Length: 122
Image (cartoon, rainbow, N blue to C red; front, top):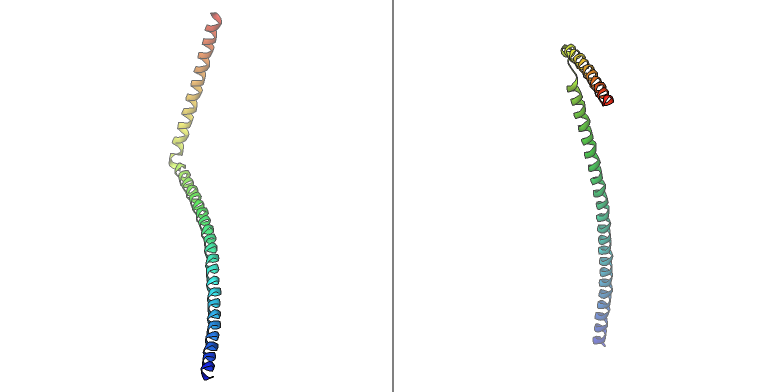
């Protein structure tokens, strides 16, 4: 009987140990599943954040480029401004150019009239 009793005690101990190991194994499985799905969620969340950061970088780069273009245009317009000491020279040049344009137009009209007269006589 003592042998049976000690064997039964050993079996009871191993049975409890087996239940405990199943509990530990289940807890480990649940925990590893939680880690897997949380890392999967974290990956997709970070990927979405990364995409939004890329879009933000692109829009910021476009804004900076537009600001640089505006700045360059403003600087170019500032270069086009004629200083006051040269304004009278520019006016004289514009008047002379206008006079030349008027003369050229008169000459062109005279040539057209002469060609028209020549064509009518032929």
